[in-house]
Image (cartoon, rainbow, N blue to C red):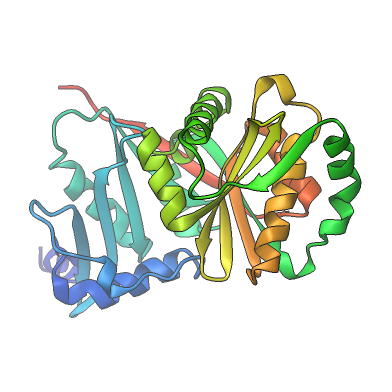
Length: 308
């Protein structure tokens, strides 16, 4: 009995996140993604009811976990995020699952294949390796737009004209843009991680005006292809690339993305990012032609919640 009490005394204490934990939690999460992103204390706030727990040992926060709705794109799922000492993940997860709100059927976890502590936990905890996604980056300082001029010239002679869409474009252009965006969502393969939150026509327009650059290809004035870039400091990220079905298979998407990346390079952006599900082979091929370097896969793990 004495030995058991002594062992229990060394187990971490689980408790809800407090605002004073923000610095430690931000560092744990930054470390957990190997610096792929940098988290700041300002991103973390106490919530009621609490959705984030921490594991504390000898006065130090050694691990953290959060269970919250995955988002509008997957309304029946909760997302489990874990960071820190993997030995505390099971206890943190069980504590969170004991308070699951009604209306959810499954739990999803997302981690990159080289984030060992999370990969090991999800596998050991009986989650299913359900979907795989890819991320890729391009060094824009080495991107050569001239390599795509023959393709662009050939398409131009066939009537395809790329341009950056003006924020003051007429309403008919925004209607066509939104219709193409909706068509792309219907057509492209996706998984929970790569399914964007739904946008209305007006939300799409305001998002582009506020924080993006949108590029389109026209044929006889009609928009037949779209690609969008989010502008984040020196980096740009591809948000949406779609070609109307009647114009696919001709290199239109490749030419338009090359046009957009040339614009980003000329504007002083130095890096470009993109990604998607591994099932979207056409877009993987487009990005390979453009020179993107594919990184380690992202894995989405799934576990169904027991029905009552």
